[in-house]
Length: 254
Length: 327
Ligand SMILES: Cc1cc2nc3c(=O)[nH]c(=O)nc-3n(C[C@H](O)[C@H](O)[C@H](O)COP(=O)(O)OP(=O)(O)OC[C@H]3O[C@@H](n4cnc5c(N)ncnc54)[C@H](O)[C@@H]3O)c2cc1C
Ligand SMILES: Nc1ncnc2c1ncn2[C@@H]1O[C@H](COP(=O)(O)O)[C@@H](O)[C@H]1O
Image (cartoon, rainbow over all chains, first blue to last red; front, side, top):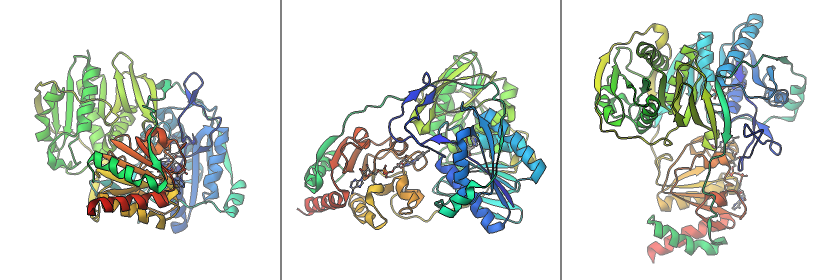
């Protein structure tokens, strides 16, 4: 089978976010870059599907030249090749990103045949757009199922599980299909050294789509105000236990 | 003044409950704001919605539409999107709003895809106008974005628990209708349900959660955390550093890509307090951090802290609780 997984390069923010560029971007000078946890699981799922069923896995990103780093990371885990829609680094809204991805999928499928599955994250880690999977499904005329934590392919169909009301809802759709996954669907592997070496010679096909006018147009980013009060230190080491217990008692939880 | 359409879902996802969920009432408040005095249409889908419909006038709806169809016995996101999009066209509304729940986001994204319009997910504020301007959550709410929706019709969802529901005490006429659906609209639908094995305190609902992070060091390192949780009747949680190390299952993860919790008390042991972790505990009333680093970011997010090695602090707290109970 053939599986495509879509990933997005995002800054690895951890502490308090600072902004640059007239409050239109995260100051990433001191940060590394990564992909979202959902997408890491998407990559793992793609690799596992090809290990189990044979075929080819492809990774795609729409992002700056530096996003080759994320494509190589995915290939180090076992993805065969990459499609890079190179941008100048400015963000694309979900509608524009999806349209460019659809064009790239159509072009690749015209040459290499259809993807049985297109895997994505449920939402991008940074923008949280919650829409690219639905737009891909609609544009390509394929069933799209969001928020998946269990996936099994058999007999030209895929059975999908989604957490719901303490249990799991089950979907079953025909392939080809578009599926967005959530972290927890699997436990992604770590790259091996041979995997990293092999990834260096795997092909990346670049193209440069034109950024259309944005219809969800960012005005500015705002870091929400939090009451950044320092915690009351109850003590140091095990000697703090009585003070903790007093605090718990005052909360009425004992 | 403009007409607005709002998707209302029922609590528990189970059609049977017949009560609108909180997040939908919050979406209805945003819809009312966007309508600025114009008609606020609410749509509930499925038989189970019918009993919820009657109350929506009190929360800002001026008219309620109930869509019933033989094929709508289980969730079918494309069918829901078709019904919303068709009704939006029929009513000529200026905006379509929904709750920023899993179901709401996937349905409204599909509405936007069908109508080829932009989609703004998880808005925390809306400003009505010819061009609707929204504030929306990024990074699970750790960052906000102000954006203009450059479209004749705004499609958006509201971030759960950021816009207050507003009681208007009004009443609304309820119309039931049978939507048109094709097989293609029903290709994606829930065909079964697997019950989860019950046991322990559920993380999402727990009043107290004791969590461990990388500082716990290993799977076995969680024994004292489990012990403290047991004494407090608490659920055990963890950070992503723990789940990706394979020490705990992802179902225990708290945060942006884990479970979002709102306990009365959150005890974070050996967790640094990354924004994505804290995005999951915004609703916690009191946070106690146990960390050997007095400069860890969690020190500004927590109410109380103990500075020290959790491997000795946590058992000491358990012992002190026992002593107090028996003493
Ligand atoms: C898009 C995205 C989504 C994410 N989603 C989530 C999420 O949902 N949940 C989540 O948790 N993370 C999430 N993360 C990861 C997050 O950024 C952090 O990497 C993670 O929370 C760190 O976990 P930690 O605090 O356990 O580890 P660390 O950051 O390594 O912190 C360990 C802490 O333990 C303390 N410590 C060490 N040893 C001891 C000891 N013996 N006693 C006491 N203290 C000790 C250290 O001082 C330190 O403060 C996400 C990241 C991204 C990019
Ligand atoms: N620029 C991009 N390049 C590749 N994939 C993307 C891009 N933006 C979004 N996606 C994919 O679509 C998913 C959902 O993104 P979104 O709808 O923007 O929240 C992400 O998790 C990715 O898998």
